[in-house]
Length: 471
Image 1 (cartoon, rainbow, N blue to C red):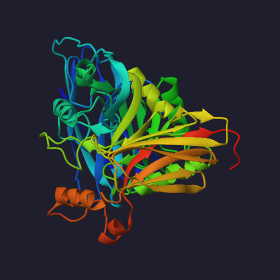
Image 2: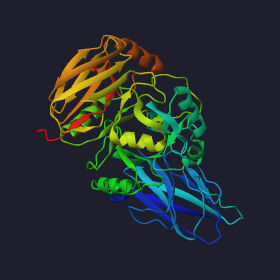
Image 3: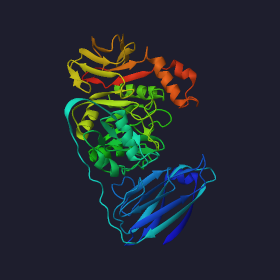
Image 4: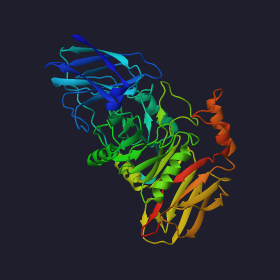
């Protein structure tokens, strides 16, 4: 049987709650639900789509999530044995369900939304949820990964299989697939994880005024944040579930406009460096200077196309997060992320940058104020190394050689971290980026003046921290 629901949503509805609920009753014995959305889509009228079952509560809910596709789809199905990507298959409990309309953009005159909801009661199996595998590759060393990318389980065109192929093409060791507001990508990535390429559980909490990645939990995390203080609710939920929380791309066009929560990580580099990442880095620097300890990570935010693209400056693993691990496993990756045992570099073949202070690795907390730093650098001859503490730049060195160790001694305030800034490599990097976007205009709202004036970072270390140091 099918039913038609027509609702009119207004800017007043949006201001009251950006999530608008259309209830419908699901009788016992239902084995499939189909929903179709129709509305006058336009630049000023964008309505997202999702679904919650009868177990869901008001925010924050731990149960009842059945799917989210944002603005990427205008229809979905949920059955006991299968579901549209982004939606959760499985038992269909009887009771009041809700189609959720995300009021992302609503015109002044409002918008009329039509929903068609069809229910079926045919016999179907109940397919189990995927079981997480825990592959391990023995051996300590530096391992490469991308901690932010998307498939067609949210708003990308590409399948998990195609993204898997892209990660193998890039030579990655680990990959976190953070589809928007859903965890259903695990249908593929749980069984596909292997010692050759370990998949890390992730989800991107996506709202109109801020995005954050959740790592290392099978639990879906409620994304329906509406108040500044809900950022603290978010971090509490994530940590209660045993996960890590990262603040994503805190820069134009989607800065973090909530209160700053108890985050573990910050995505300081997203996509190519010139995609305004210096703003994220400035905000990271200020948070470190205030006394926060946040591990720096990077992620491409690559939305996998339907086809496998060749390597280049705007594809997967640009940038790459490189972590020191005792073994390659999801557990080891998550522990190294939290501890800050690594660095971010421009690509899988980008410069190596490893900082140690008084013999201790990145992420360490040292009691001593006097610091003797060693910085290992490979693949950046002709560029510059910059050392920074809470007051800003401490020192700058020319990098003379392809495989070198630089030393520095001093008394940094609060922390010490370092960056590789393009010198001799700058023209080559710029030409590669321009070649990837030609014949189109400069992306990301950039101008030639901004590009000419902006230093290009090639690699960023995590900090070493110092206790009992005056700001």
